[in-house]
Amino acid sequence: MNKILFCSLALMAFLGLYAQEENEPITKVEIVKDSSYKSPDAFGKHEIRLNALDLVVHPALHIYYERIVDESNGYGVSLFVNFGDDDTTYQDFALTPYYRFYFLDRKDFGASGMFVEIFSSFASANFHRYDRRLKDESEFQFSMGIALGKKWVNRNGVSFEAFAGVGRYFSNEEGVPDAHGRFGLAIGKRF
Image 1 (cartoon, helix red, strand yellow):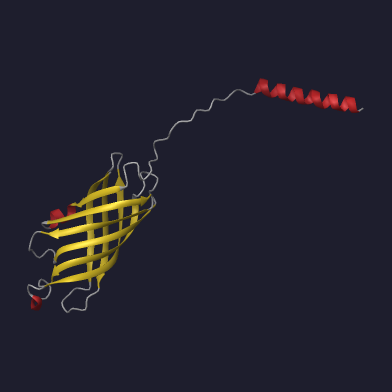
Image 2 (spheres, one colour; image 1 turned 60 degrees about the horizontal axis):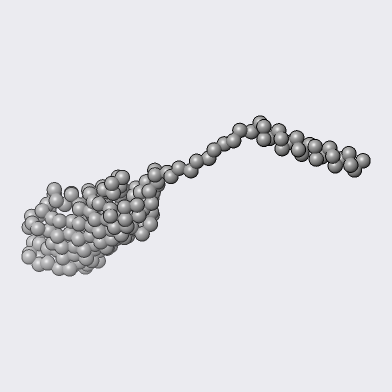
């Protein structure tokens, strides 16, 4: 009885293997590199931008440098220099370090899409435009704030961003505004 059971199991195993070999077609698998996803360092981890809004609104230069940490984070600094003495701004010079958290659109080139920015500002300003008693007095000011925006990066590493935010001054001087805005339409290059 054991010989019959053993022979029948061996025959069924052999027929099962033979049936699989005959009925199943051979499938070729080819691995193709997918170029639709680019890592944040596909163009490098550095980016320089120019705020076109400040060039149009008043004669000022506002330039940004950002270091890309990974697909979700970046930090940098912006430099604002006012070349005019019109009433469109009271800041003469501002140095603004910032840190950004990117959300939603990280699949493209990393460090792009919607972002939240936390910033501080160190600025020299003339407040005589807001309070005539402080005429021609300039002072150093410090502020902290938050901004929201969106950044787009194309396949050539050119970036465009739009953002808006508000900061609060840490000054008790009379005639000094309590808050300031941070707005921009910037174009740049990642390298």
